[in-house]
Length: 450
Image (tube, rainbow, N blue to C red; front, side):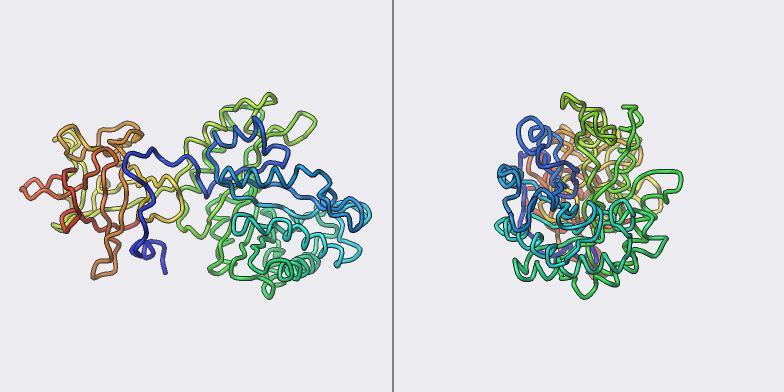
């Protein structure tokens, strides 16, 4: 079923009139560490508005000595529960064996049953989190510095034993992999690893990959489309991406470009993105990826990320008279159903604040081709005059209104300011007015995604 076909399924209204835009975005995440899940760093996470965090639960920390599964630091379970209590989805990356279990921190374990025990205990430890935690299997196994030697067959063994552990500890747990960096797709490593994983994947499992900008990097949108072509209908998460730049302005603008690519993704199958990363101290060579300074104050990239967490749909909207909505410049930007749908001015951008698919109850703002946002005017016409779409007059709650005979999506728009529906006026001007207390034919618009 297509993403917009799913819109017509009856869904409970999730938002109440008068609420501001949601401040937590489940599709957007950040890479952090367990030690940054309390105090001021946790406060910064809340301010950022992400809905997910990626942390490393390294084997060396969880089992520093054979069969001593005390997670090394007893605060770790508390930190993760605290992140969960804050409403964050936890992506726990598993790997990095201790010296007793492997010749090096990137080497295959001497005994895969030791690896099984570690995965089993971690999944058991966090079984109470249910679907709010996902377990990533190893990190960048196509690179020698992370898996020695970098072999899709060896990775297949790791995933197989992780699945055995999952089935014994909690069959409902979600695993993720192969967690490859972008070179794995053209080299064939990704395809070979996915082939090895296939028999161990369960319906809830997701495919995870990384992408960073660089002179040899393919465009992000093209790269992700190629990844989606390898995985069928399974969800894909981009679990590492970001801009490593000491220049605040360049880091912010380039990170914003990455997030806007995600916002305009053609399919919700590309379901999550994790920016690398929240923080690093100056002893860490990757600290310039951080969105926070050394004193935990935000860099401009922090604000840039927070400002663009939404999903964007390019659409045309047809009213009950068969004509398409577009602004009338001669009438102060009044929205009227007078167009035939071919003009550029008949295209609007719907910004879905909570990301994912557009569903009943979602809060949105709508932008016209000239960059202005739609708002309910003072005498209740719908006009394209808002420069922000940030106040209640420029926000609307979407409700699905069923499918047209041609199978197109139909929806209604309810103002977040007055609780009334946008409606086609019966006059010759075909004005759109925000003045109806209930929804019927004139309050229903047929939406075509462009």
